[in-house]
Length: 209
Image 1: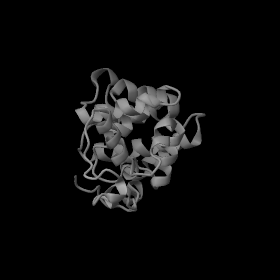
Image 2 (image 1 turned 45 degrees about the horizontal axis):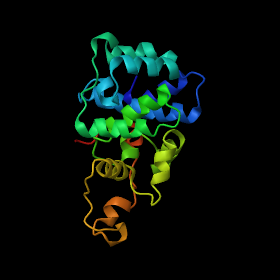
Image 3 (image 1 turned 180 degrees about the vertical axis):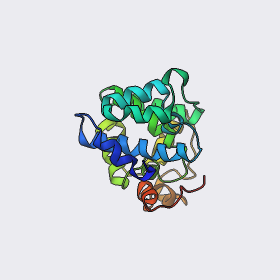
Image 4 (image 1 turned 180 degrees about the horizontal axis):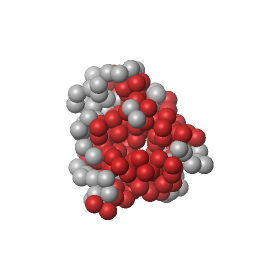
């Protein structure tokens, strides 16, 4: 199977879960799959899950795909938790604190989003989503109380780290209000760009980072 076909392959083997949730998780896993095959780490590492969590997620959402995923992921029992830096752990904890239902899926999404925040592109791109609107829908669906706090529609990655800084008593802002800040466009500007899965389907290699 080509990397470019991973998303469709997963969706064809999905279980009876919510279609939007299936789309989001398939997008993240397909992009993590591409990174793993490009030598950027194991599939669990790129996805932000340990092997056991990845197996559980796959069996719940894509039961027909687990045998194929397992070949790339390796033995779940042999894979310890993904290495977590302080920033990643802080994002994971923030998301989990605001998880609407405290479900297994929300726990896994918090971990995957936190890992993908370490990538250099817009967060929606590094989650494999089609556009920023899908990321906003994901946040409202699973982390609604947190999404409600992003009243000014700040870029999601910027917003998450701003929330962490505030919780820890730090500030990176140079102005008392956002509209007076020289970095306004960096936090609130357009988040345009090409979807990463579309980039892969075009036959081009993953960007270097």
